[in-house]
Length: 245
Image (cartoon, rainbow, N blue to C red; front, side, top):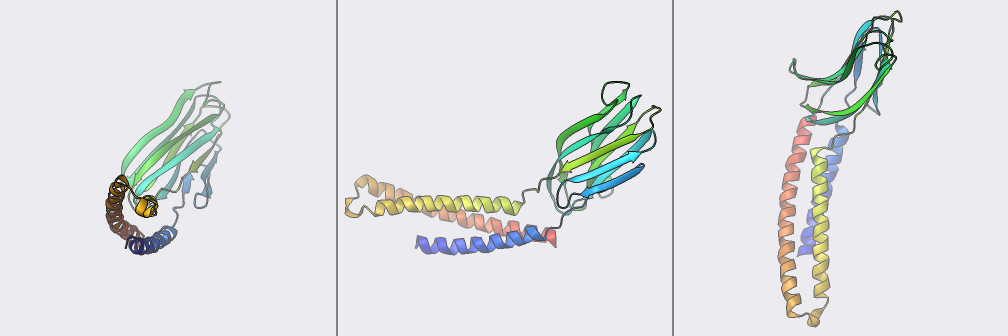
């Protein structure tokens, strides 16, 4: 009876996992776009790797933005690396993150900055900042980073690069799938213990009989929990598919 029930549940699990994989694959990436003073370039849009912005200004002041538009609700982590050269005298540099929702900026957070600084302490003569942050996103949110810089140097140049490493967020379906697989592993372990005791046959002791009964009850509870998890998994997949639609 238990084996038949396990096979049926595993068949359903495989079907749901396939649906989850298709949902994940159907979720398009979010390209990053650069804008700002001087020559500002989206060197890499982040679809297939790191997102990279480069700027070069023949002048003494500038501001730049690197942003994307969220397609799903999630926590998006990001590792950022901002480096460049803003000359030597009265050098300023800054970077902040932001989130705009329904046309209103709901998050503005300074990540790094300094100035005005003269020769020869950073950022004078060059700067190199890095860190990690995260964005709490809803579909349609515009999120990203802003950089600013200036100098009062005869070397009127501002040069910079922002590189973003954006790990793929763990989907709710992926978390559910891992939980289900863990539960199936526990069921297999309990089932193996039951079979080992049953294999003793007539040699089973009173203690073995009590342990067997306990394991049978445990297995039944594990099946009930797995059934509930499968029901929750189905709801999760419905939410994922709903976000995609």
